[in-house]
Length: 487
Image (cartoon, rainbow, N blue to C red):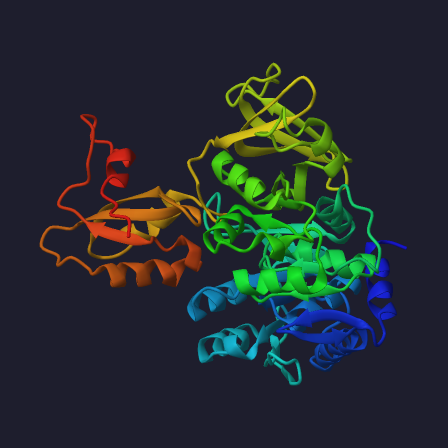
């Protein structure tokens, strides 16, 4: 059996046993497969063929989880659409993708979105939070979807590293690698404590969602991460490991969670951005839980380098700053940014990776890295100056372009500034056009929010008479960052 068949079979094998906990309520395997069947029936009644793609305005909710698992199991192409953006932005995504059907929560079924669905002649399946109401709305004419959606699998979203978020197709057969990147170093059994899922499904968070059902384990699903709910799940179910981000580690430390509440944890794999050594050391000192940091990207459908517990026990002390070694089926090399030639061990360059199940091509990243003679990979930051906001990567130029489109803005500069919880956040300074009244900070934030996902919105925007520039008239980002008045 391939990945899709195995996923479907194991989901249905849960039967009346608990499968997914959401908002402290357990849903059985029969509940999940019932939602899957109801959604499939609604799409069939709307005239969709089994292989037609759908767009999902995705939220971390149990019916959305069922929809995604069902689509993957049925080999139906599914394109993720971020829900945490304005209704106008959701509508623009729908009109661009032109899927034959859109699956979305009632919360996102706004007049603006409904108009976009009607405009392209699509169907809509509207879900309630509890999953008790499914409504098929059939458009007036058939739609011709974006041809990039033809491949079966999940079209997940990047966080905007090279501009506005783009969709990366992850074919069904590649999803085996995503599960491996979540489970490397672990032998898993259906009797193990449940998987704890909290990363947004729209991006690589779908990797977390797949792991439990694929191996026949229960899943605890959080709509979003909170310290209280995450700790409750760890304590209640004696969870031994769970994927985390640097932001989560900082939040747990800030909340001063009692060590006994995390006593069941054996280790925490992490990624989606760098973790400061001081934060890592403080967490491990306080809780005695090793942090096994990995490196990956949306384009790789998960991690390409990681620590296993065994590798950490042997080499963790000597290689604490590295992201471990390449995973099985992955090759990594470091190349000169200008020539593309390989560099010597320990020399910095751009990281390239080749993932066997994705294809034979080397994929170049914008991450500076080095690899030692023993194969340990160390990440040294981004070559493109992107801001890493708690795992969501933001290209400053993307936000600047939106600010410059405001009729009162003459010039703008967007920089990353330090934030104890999120690591880094965007801050902006603008010049106004002569004779134009200065827009308020709230107006400018709303302007950015209208065009980009919410994590792109600067934490503060200041209006200056002139942006600081050097003699060549280039704006000096360091001087702009100095204008930030941290709360």
